[in-house]
Length: 320
Ligand SMILES: C[S@@+](CC[C@H](N)C(=O)[O-])C[C@H]1O[C@@H](n2cnc3c(N)ncnc32)[C@H](O)[C@@H]1O
Image 1 (cartoon, rainbow, N blue to C red):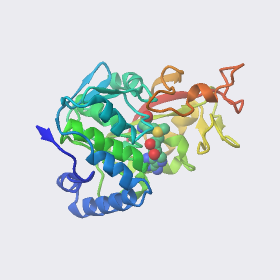
Image 2 (cartoon, helix red, strand yellow; image 1 turned 180 degrees about the vertical axis):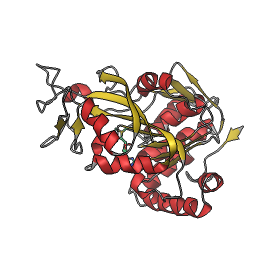
Image 3 (spheres, protein in one colour; image 1 turned 90 degrees about the vertical axis):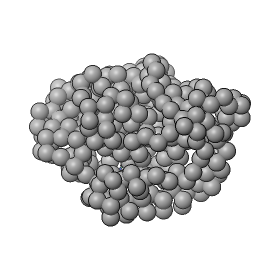
Image 4 (tube, rainbow, N blue to C red; image 1 turned 60 degrees about the horizontal axis):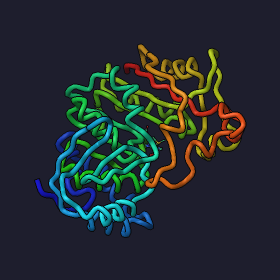
């Protein structure tokens, strides 16, 4: 199918109204539009969306890459247009043949989780979805419908860019925080929260909000930073952590499991713990700023520049 650009929320309300209470869908999309359009760069980003070339839409996953669009673009011009929405953090994605080498090899995270979850026919909520890269992986794994939420406007515009090439698909993204989503958007079969818990001042509230969006016996996939330890340690950084200002609590694995149980989740199981490498998260042409290598202690790479344990991530599943 041929595509040209439209407002980034063109089909969002009707898609959400089909899946949820229409009033909740209307409220959500109104807030989405308000939040997006108040960003000082919204007009500049929208012009980039409008400048995308018409393409033949479609998408597939190949060796972890989301490949979308089958046009024959002017590669230099398309690269320049896509770069208006830098930094590109989550991927990798390839749009009309232009390879967007993102900061993260998000496919590696997906590979650690996907073998353990069955998304066949599922309605999925992806909290902190970024540009929606994982939503495509979820659809590819059999999900019927994916809704992401993420308050970072740039990532929502990147999602709109990707959809320009991919075409209409059941991978939607609201520019909202989880806490802002109308209660009518719920009853999901699976809820993913990856890389969000440590950004929340009150992790218990985040876990309660995740539980509230799941149907009974629904599946939670939780991925977050943890610290080494067999006891119930929780590191609360006094200042920055790995250069980030907004990191509030890093539990040990047993602490994290205890938090899940306190939030009412059952059958918590750890799928994987991995130390994040500078191959998985790195500076690229598409994310030219500091990345992981710049926030590790050069003389002791097990530590961050603040002298804290270097980033390691745990992925867990649990049932509501
Ligand atoms: C570290 S990124 C993780 C992105 C992706 N889920 C992943 O695992 O690679 C955290 C994302 O969560 C989003 N975020 C932060 N607070 C949020 C909240 N309260 N609700 C939803 N998303 C949130 C941020 O905008 C950011 O895109």
